[in-house]
Length: 239
Image (tube, rainbow, N blue to C red):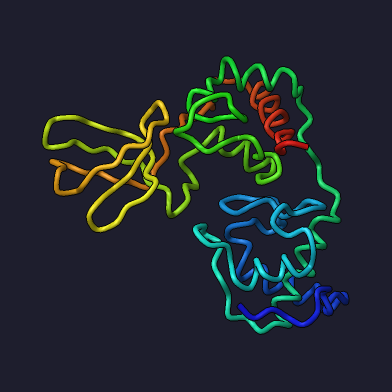
């Protein structure tokens, strides 16, 4: 991995940021949103980025991607990478309108009526079949969180697969796929247990890009969804 000789971004003029905006629009906006407020990719419109606290670490992420995620590497020239970095930093300086709901009521909804902890965890509480919510407020924008609550199947990550299988002995298993190769597959069941199967021992195997998460449109009021989004936006890990 070849890194630049400087640790500070040398291309931060208004012209560089404008060029970075154009490069970002063609290569990054599809996942991170036109204004960086998240989507399939992380929310970039915030003052501090957990994976890129300084210029060099941001350059590394943009240039080389993040292993085992959908964040790819790029073959852009170093100057162009720096220009994208300059534009991304500018997103964190933009004023953004945060959620305006009642976070306390939102917590009650997430833990109670919404049933979110049946699948998701917050720290040591909750299930393991869905992604952890402990840092979701730093990774996802309020708009993305609201979209996930109302239409969760609209933007499922490419590498996420929901597995339904039946072994030759008749046992069935359903859950998110963790790993898969030519000979075996591993998944989590509803209680968060890791299950592993040899494919030669399976009678059927169905793996789809979909989510079992239900839509809360009509199940929660608009106000309740707003409260839940407000609470989820406060979840930023251990401070």
